[in-house]
Image (cartoon, rainbow, N blue to C red):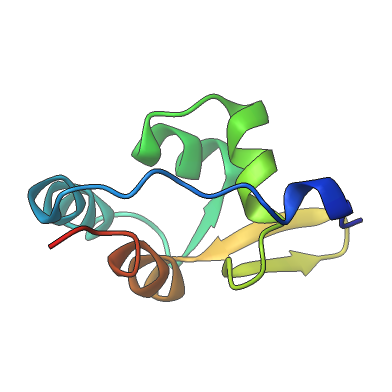
Length: 84
């Protein structure tokens, strides 16, 4: 369910070094990530991650009742959140 008040939430833009560190951590992770794993990677609480996953463009998929994030698409999304 997408709430209209969530559309204005933006993840903080991070420096490229921070994003590069996260991408290295992702290499050994499974192809699909859980919300808990995404929170751990981003160092955010689970409720905070839930506020981001409903943003347009976030690589979220739903299988039955399980919400998952495709690792490769998450990396692409994350790269759009860097500052120069």
